[in-house]
Length: 385
Image (tube, rainbow, N blue to C red; front, top):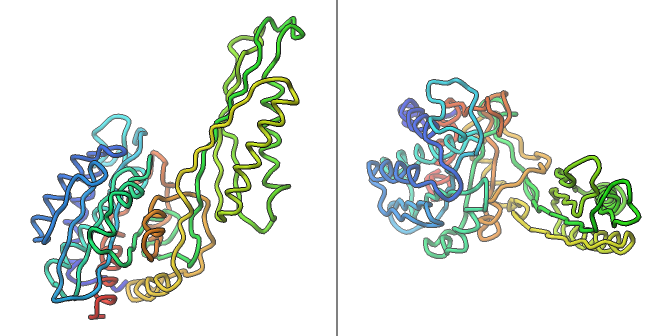
């Protein structure tokens, strides 16, 4: 690995930052202590501008280079997940029911490491915009930061992000041009009939058969409504209804998720689910309502910026995959890529427990590699590489 020597020199310090954050996880938009820690570090580095309270607890730092030049945004997410940790590490979460199970503590530390190096060297023209965002795991802090004008306010021209990857070897960068992660939508279908005694179904209007028919029809959309070469996932993940063996329920609620890469497929699925719900309700003589919620759009890398990011990754690591098949997970960096050209990459940390698993822990050995990538993006794009 061609890790920047100076960054390698403070790798232990980066591990300390990361473990501190891991011990003190915060959720959603409420990343106030995390943000305060980030701000204290940025001040100690000599970051030129620090802006707080964006998207409630987000932080933006600005590092000025040597004279006019490009403006590049580098993003890290800060929030944790509402789950119990099972690692038993010395730096395990100190907050019951919360843990950094997706590597956001590592993402934040990598960006802090790049910031420290860039403040020390200033070996670039233009401006670096450091974006520390909350709520990636919940309501889309990236969306809120974009809506609050981060790109315009700080003049960001391009934007880049890394996500740790427990499926890749340590130091392996993986990305692709075009869609790399899916859009994610949720749906909830409420079927209402007339409840009563299970021995007298003729006196009731049972919502269960209709709910079953809706579920089966919705799941058939993948096989029968979309090109087999397209990408679509529909998962029915919740069914709630009934309280006893001898009671016909008044109501059944179905819930699930839709993942897609193509906006046309996304539109088609929403329309077809609505038609299925209405048609089956009419067929079974019950009431039914669909609540379809569009969440994160697909994460779509821009071709030129991806080619550039891959060239930087190859300078840092011999392990680079530039044709990664798209994944059906979702990421709110998609909003930033909709606002500005850029690239999202996975960084291997060595194979181990999956993200969102209670045994997951960020590998601190990956942090200098990620920080070196961020630093070289700036030095190469801004004229010194």
